[in-house]
Length: 339
Ligand SMILES: [Zn+2]
Image (cartoon, rainbow, N blue to C red; front, top):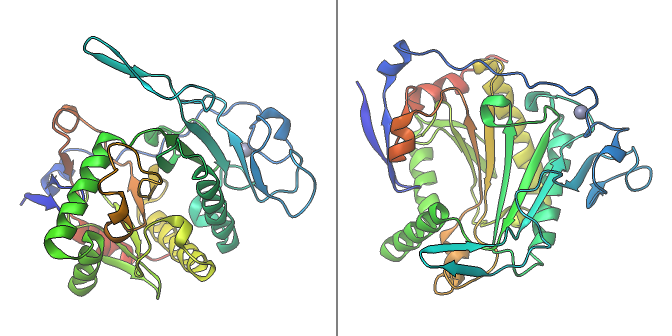
């Protein structure tokens, strides 16, 4: 029996429709066309723009010997050299494509699945994200940072080599802004952060709980928009990835490693998007009145969205997702996964 569920986090509705599974199988993971030489592989450093940052125990800049490496995106959506500021031409508003667009090359090894990463590789990856977020925060013109991974063709990846992207924007995307205002309103009404409320309810309820350690917990959200969606949140009040301490980075790494082992055990090869929930990093006109509340109302999180189904006309025209796998079933399979 299908259900229309209310998603308190995103303030939206989702249709959980197990009957739909009889109609369509999951999309198979789609291999990317490989170019002859991978610019992200160790030894090919000259094929990328000069590096911005690297964790490099050996060698010098733009040479082999690194663990992670950060470079400007060669095919940038936005440029830091552009001039920020809105322009109006009658009805039409536009601005130059100002912003930052970086690529974190997660590791020297090519095409490694995340369940094959060592715990140390997860640690270096998270430390690198922390470093870049901290550095980009120094630019007051960038008010919002989006940190995400696209893995596989169904997730819009164009490179098979493990990588993460950061886009820094001079504004807060409207969808994010609506979500942030909703969280602020919830906090005013209940004197409690929405994530804290949801997390403690899910831990008590247990049916959507996948795994946890002392510091982090992974759940299949009650109103998951896609099959096998996973949401990882810290148990402590931490609003951004930059506030995760060294012990926390190790705990998050251990949990993600275990989680990916279970996801691959249940799903086999699969494509996914992964994103970091980070509140706006600087105030600007649209956040001026509520910016001081973000420490209380926003909670850091990592969201993994497997791309097992496509988006149809209904989803695109309504923003309402149809998910054919009940999150209780996804959580049960992930809890019992045999690796
Ligand atoms: Zn490569």
